[in-house]
Amino acid sequence: MSDMTFENAMKRLEEIVSKLERGDLTLEESIKVYEEGLQLNKFCSAKLDETEKKIKMLVKDKDGFKLKPSDDLG
Image (cartoon, rainbow, N blue to C red):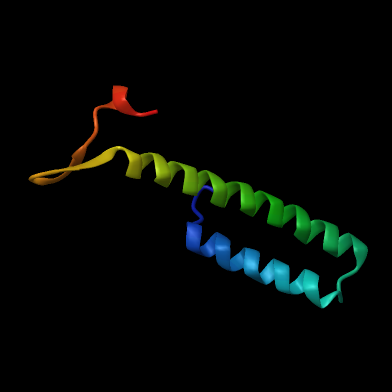
């Protein structure tokens, strides 16, 4: 999953949800795509957490945005 983008992962998650909601998969197929969905959810959550940390590092001052010193993160 290292080369997957957040957008691609979300698109695949939407496909999985649609498949599961249709209810036409066998139990084994449902379990397989559900497990894939869990992995994609974990991937997306990690990407969002990473992005949130990056955003928190930015602070606005009179000259625009700058990086916040790392010791101020928290």
